[in-house]
Image 1 (cartoon, rainbow, N blue to C red):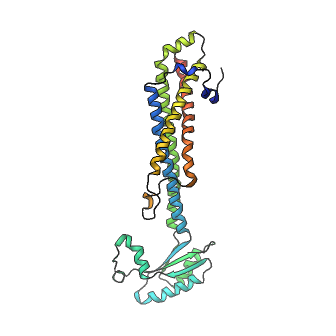
Image 2 (cartoon, rainbow, N blue to C red; image 1 turned 90 degrees about the vertical axis):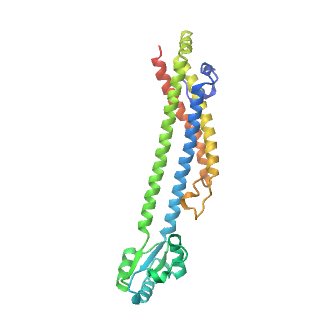
Image 3 (cartoon, one colour; image 1 turned 60 degrees about the horizontal axis):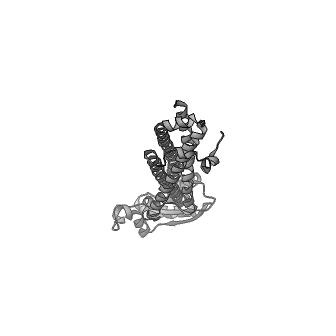
Length: 298
């Protein structure tokens, strides 16, 4: 008897009546599916939120650069002016301005507090550089600064952007690996539950075979039952996971990575993929386990 997912879900034949509707295997299947779906929601949310955060940081640094003036006190003013002149005549530089004491103090305040004595610490002068969309030639600019203002050091934030991009790629990969492990664990638990249910109903299976029932008919019963149980459990776990994510703090610049870990925009639709995906995993795992167990059952 040929059968597929559609016929299995229709339940027209009533074959699933041979499977106990309650019991240990039913509770185990639904609990496993719910727990794994709950974890899948958080793995998905964390992966997407980390990607957004890295993209935001990278974009914020992409068109900005900093020039630091490290020179003897008597040369700082001259080299600062020379560096500003070079920057303002460099193609690709939209704006260059020296940071005032208040701006430099604001940059250092999160680490050293609000009462930072800039004069005593001799913090170098800083120039904020904003690029155009085309950007500037960093190598050529460094050469010009070295000739006009030897104490000027250009930081185009490349060393900041590259780790962010790598971190985003690795976290996305970890998110995919986590989802894969969750799927594998779900399949393993459902396979064990199916085998336990088949073993517990060995006498029923023998009786069905005596009256001419084919293994495909018997397998259909278990596949339908366990797939629907997994779908129900995954749906409950997904709803619980989405509700928990919705209760997390919203994105806040002060909170940094610790806030905004939820979904954003159309990302809220993505968890809807989890229940049908769990059902497909359960379908494949149950089908494999059922036919294997039936072959081994005399």
